[in-house]
Image 1 (tube, rainbow, N blue to C red):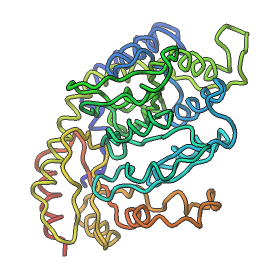
Image 2 (image 1 turned 135 degrees about the vertical axis):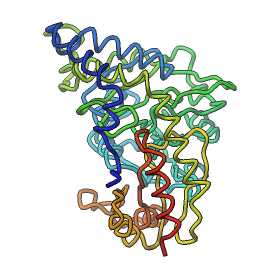
Image 3 (image 1 turned 180 degrees about the horizontal axis):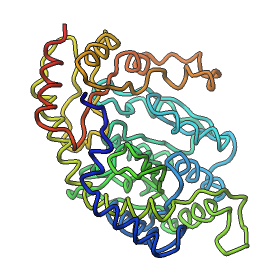
Image 4 (image 1 turned 90 degrees about the horizontal axis):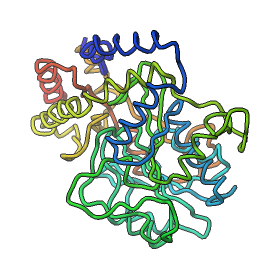
Length: 387
């Protein structure tokens, strides 16, 4: 059986280092908000390219805390609108509605599978306060047009970077250059140097769910930002609302990364770029070698880190069963769009044909660093032979 994602094989590659990191935490006798967390936050902020990294319990909390902090800062209030891609995992939208904000769905570009930047401006109203982009499948969703829209309309740009650890964008334009100089919002200058996703917008949320490119051995997440005020508020709210022991400035929650997960992530961070290079190699093989008119392969993207390699097929369910019969495990991301989920029945009137088509046709095939060349060749052969 070729597993969709073989976490045991992936983690075995750094088993001695992980065990040593766990042992050091156990020997320290300190399991929350300790040295391992401080080290990981410092290293991850340095890797992403931001001044601040705040470790939290998971990726959904990271998104939720960013929006909650903006409300505490007076940037947003109940009923304000957040533009969001229609094709995303539900966590992106849950964070918006949990904060009593309103999601405004925008269709993806059928070629890039990311939010269509030509449709964003028509979705902006007087209540719009932010654009939340999702680097879906490990591909950068940011474009220079998005930066221009955020500047002209004075919108916060929030990144959902749950699927794109290590992804880069070249020559980013600052989404915040229209913000007054006194603001602590980031200013990403145009540059020929690569800029990691997670440092492009005003704030970014990261998930370290075990299946991510940078995955913990349990739930974990982080917020990255250059906005020091936002960072301080996020950190306080995530610690019961306290920035000083037993003094509570906010009605907070308990959302903290633990020392074991921080230590494990710090080990795996050292391997992230190498692991992503292997994912890119495998993706390139699929793109270049799979020729089957029944299966649509995504366009090449040199900077994607291929958290998910999606193929699209009108006979998606039959293709999935075919691969299963040949011992190849696959997944679907995601079978039911958010606006058609029972919990968001109030949006069921929306007509989002591209999103709905992607949900009907998408199939995720194995694409991770632990795959062997022989396994990749088997998957290629099977996809070519599908009829």
